[in-house]
Image (tube, rainbow, N blue to C red; front, side, top):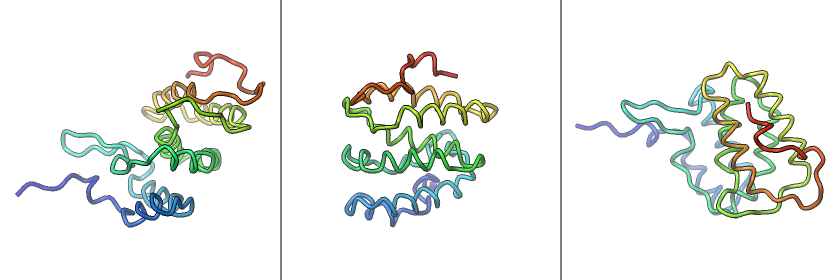
Amino acid sequence: MPREPIIDTAPGKQLITLIVDGNSASAYSDFYNIRKVWCDGYPLIHDRMVTYGFLDDVWFKQEIKLSLFEMVTDIALKENDQYFYCALFALNELMPDEQIIQRPLGYGEKLLQLRERCKALIHEPNLARAWNGLLTKSRCLKPVEPDESYDTRIKDLML
């Protein structure tokens, strides 16, 4: 009898409906905290011949991604080192990339702070790839007003 994929048995699924239907930031925070512990701080789950992201069983509409984006950015800034890669991975998953949207004020400064964290934790496997992917997606965020903290080219921020 075939075994079901590990991602199908991941904890926290009961919170997905609350996040989607209620657009609940606290439900997302709880969901993220459950999943980061479940994957032990490494967001890539290897299951036989398949690799899943620790959030691969969840898909959010653009509106929900936008409503959670600033909160998840703040989670990434405050996350402890053990779970930082999960936080960066989650931010990458929520980064709006389906259309160009307005960049939240202060995001450039937060991006620079995240870069410093990444540089300090560069020894983590695949962290540089996740960071560079986040930067590429950041191109979809258009500044509302000049943002001096973000006044550098994306390629100059890559690790």
